[in-house]
Amino acid sequence: MTIHRALVFSVLMSAIPAVCAGPALAQACTRRGVDVACDDGRRGILSGDAIIWTDGSRSSLTSPNPGVIIGNKSSVIVGPGVFVGKGNGVVPMDNPSAPNKARCAVLDGVSYCY
Image 1 (cartoon, rainbow, N blue to C red):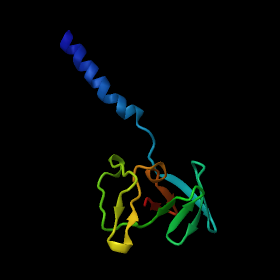
Image 2 (cartoon, helix red, strand yellow):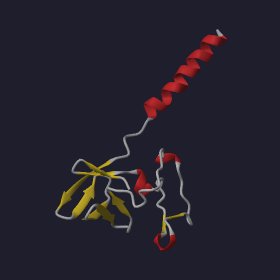
Image 3 (cartoon, rainbow, N blue to C red):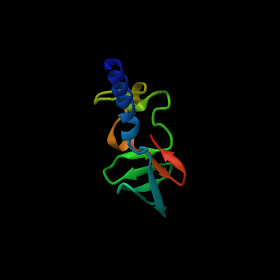
Image 4 (cartoon, rainbow, N blue to C red):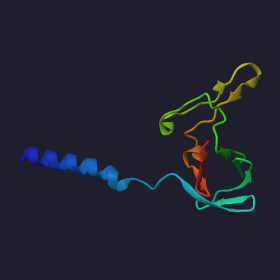
């Protein structure tokens, strides 16, 4: 009987994350001219290949640091003082786990994740 309880408990514990999984992190956005509005309430302006949000952050089509490859972005936290580049071209690296980066904006079927 104890083995049966343990088996049932382990099956239930493994099923809970599947049931409690949240929605996808992508946010559907619509565009009117250069104005962008997302279904989570964020608003911004489309500027070239980037969306500039009202808080000053940006979401781009391309990585600002193409030489830096991060595999599992959700498990990486980049703190202040992390820079990429050489010599005069050094820029601070964006934190891929930041709230504005964790939710990719999808505009016209294209993800703005950088």
